Length: 399
Image (tube, rainbow, N blue to C red):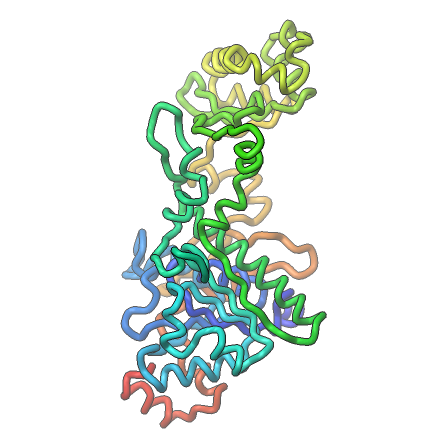
């Protein structure tokens, strides 16, 4: 596949973000062909380079999060550094940033300044609370967005405090909304005279947008959704059950026909034929009874037996996958969801495959997260800087 066939080929994206939300949005664009130029501080670069597990001093997460990006070191506190960013923006389609609102304006890189340079620019701005409102200036990470957006309140068990999911889900959700918004803005630009706009994504709003029927249920009935553990409230049966060999299996049998197949598979024809359990409302009203039956059956069998029986009965079920499970799973392998890559020293390393899968123009890993400033000289050369000018900028602390 050539560069020209990638769906975002020809787009130039300037990434001014750090850590998770902004860089994840840029990563998605880079995976599908956009030229992403990541601006990093010469003094260590993106802190993500040192987060979580390090391999020879660099985060393994970094190698994934920054794949296909070009790393350019620019000191945003230096006037010559600001001048470099302005030149890059003049040729860009999208700028992605996740600074606290107001920071870029103080640097002369706010929306008014950049759109004056490039009227067709789309600026994706990700922040804790959005660009407006009484909380706009406050710092907000993904954990805060998950809390304010409602996710944490409903996550966990009723008799225990709220818990978080095992990843930075608030940042990732915001990034996905950001990509959607940026691509919609590009479509608008294409159809309506070439004018760009701001895409304003607040982390708490990105999470809030995922909260299903929480708002109308409270407004109409005064119902506050609470923590319900592993079940889906109002939808039965859908739960996690423990096997005889102490493994955990998720079973989703909330469809009417599926529930009937499940009951038949576990030799409970009496419940399969019970008219009171023929629809979801009836099953949910007898939720405790239904779950007790499933718990007892699963608890009497091994994980392998449970999964084999339910597969034969065409009942949706899955083990709770660990990373080790994924590395040997036929479905993961068949769908190329574990890509092979080379770390800088040549060691083989598996990385997550690219999502979504496009039939004709799929995304692809061209290179893993680069060394700090690996593309500085090459990118500056495209802006017209000669070798002596680049050397002077480096000596002066601008890059």
